[in-house]
Image 1: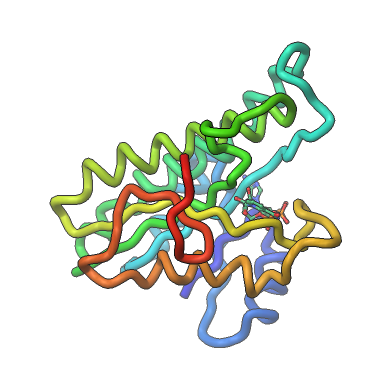
Image 2 (image 1 turned 90 degrees about the horizontal axis):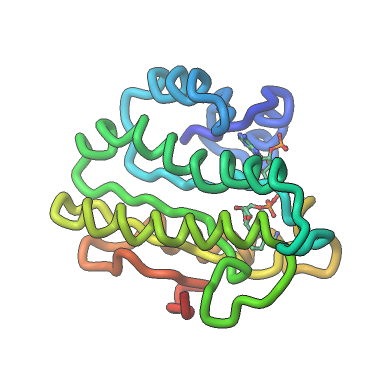
Length: 196
Ligand SMILES: NC(=O)c1ccc[n+]([C@@H]2O[C@H](COP(=O)([O-])OP(=O)(O)OC[C@H]3O[C@@H](n4cnc5c(N)ncnc54)[C@H](OP(=O)(O)O)[C@@H]3O)[C@@H](O)[C@H]2O)c1
């Protein structure tokens, strides 16, 4: 298994913490050259989890948001996932039953979208759209593409009070290991469909 991280020291530390057969690989999803190099270092890939995200901008409002921050959020949260997916698609296509998991957020759901947190929310709504598009385009090749919200998790982004990381990650593992007749183009939390 490969674990992508833009800071090699953090990648090595995370790989040690998770344990097992995990090799850290340098990966900055916002840097096309880094993405190309990371993809070139792989000889096989069965599952891609697009997890990297930034800028949970609870301090902002859409009416006067800093658009440089909105651009940064889109660069990582949307284009990063898109860029990495394109780069590794030949490897995914070469395997028998690849899976793509876009780690999204209920904050990007449109059905109950309210004000605030505009950079993050628009980037996750766009990631959800990308999920639908890729799922439709890859359905015929047996590649399942889904968006997963991990719920509120006690990470650097989520802060104290969220659920343990293992609980949030379980729904991502579920989507990464779906059987061939599993869903594609869906939005899930804890293995259950949620509204877009
Ligand atoms: N925590 C929650 O409650 C929650 C809720 C809903 C959805 N999510 C989603 O869950 C996913 C994981 O979030 P988290 O809570 O673990 O956030 P986090 O604690 O802020 O971690 C985000 C990770 O993304 C990495 N990253 C950021 N930009 C990157 C880039 N350009 N290239 C490569 N890696 C990059 C960060 O690396 P550095 O360490 O180098 O900064 C960090 O390891 C995200 O997609 C987030 O939107 C989280």
